[in-house]
Image 1 (tube, rainbow, N blue to C red):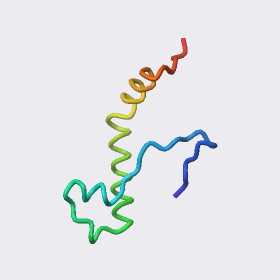
Image 2: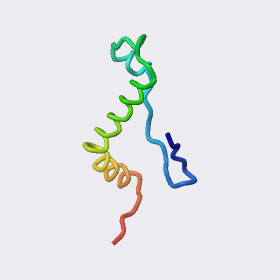
Image 3: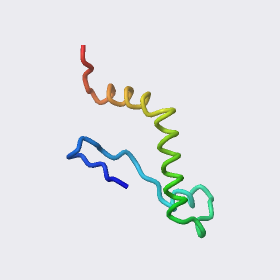
Image 4: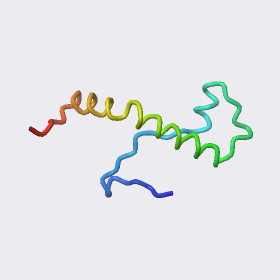
Amino acid sequence: MSVLEPKDGYFPITCVHRADLEDQGFDTSAVDDGTMLELADKMADAYLDQAFWIDLEIIADHIGIPKTK
């Protein structure tokens, strides 16, 4: 797995931890790293497909990043 870094122009948004699942009532005692990677991958896909571009525009505008003309 590659690591995306600011020096390459990438900035992390979030991550997922077994504790996040536990906070939602899931039993993680038998959840292995492969399952966590699958969960993270599917969550990333869902966010990119559904909310990322909308949130990006709203938040960038809110913090004052100007658009090109």
